[in-house]
Length: 361
Image (cartoon, rainbow, N blue to C red; front, side):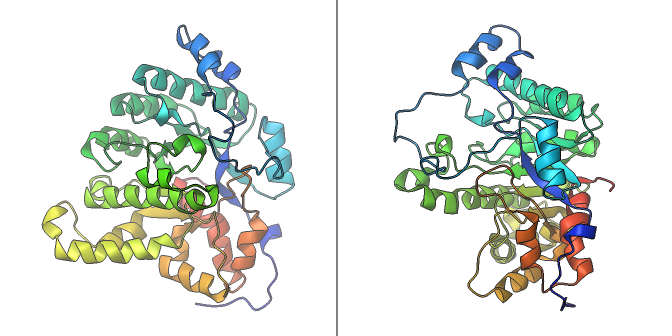
């Protein structure tokens, strides 16, 4: 692979696509209520957040030592991401822990309201792009929501929380979701979570950790490896060859392990994955994409290059995870890519995320 010897940033003259921008705290219960009928309108305001006893959940902001940000308007996105960071295409997601809601009908109504607020508040007044969120409580309702969202020009993909899904997301019960997404050319994004609200259901091992550091190191990894394994073994990419599967906020270093581990297991037990027509690694390199955030921090910077080489630059896409407290500025990724050529760095910052979500830039 060619190497860049200048060490200069390519950010100023590169079109940057950000695969993971959160509206988590930018959409209020009151705003969602505007798109709900009773009894859900009243419930979303009174039950939007479960009360918690002090000290019963982790504190990612370390007693307000870390600034808690929110993207609460298109103008804020324009200023903080486009103007300050130089991001040309922020891909917005209305992340909400809908899968944690026990009542199916309520979850479906909140799913629709969440998407409607994103469109009304953030997309209609701007030219930003977004992912529609769907809940897996009822796969047929999720497919109907994809059909509805496909009529929105600025909705380019489907967003699924890959935590607490039973059975895992490769199960045939979800085929109706993937079929709807493929029919509309809307690629799928999976996103994990490590907040306090997720420590009970999945994964079970979270309950044994007493520090946020431990859970935050592992939760996204557990969720993403489980989802990827389920998708491959159940033959989902074979059934839906025109669909891309995009993994957000789990980083990169777990990907080579999973490619080779699945290759070995498949070689020994092909009968247990009868739909596959090629190796797991081939499916992963053909249809799977992985966001850069959170970047690992190897003691030897050269190790990062070796790891990215193993995955392939055409499978790695830039993501900031903004405005989360541990977001990655584009400069952070660019520093890790200094050993690559200008064209290769542009591929990660621009071409690969655009290809993963099927957008023209």
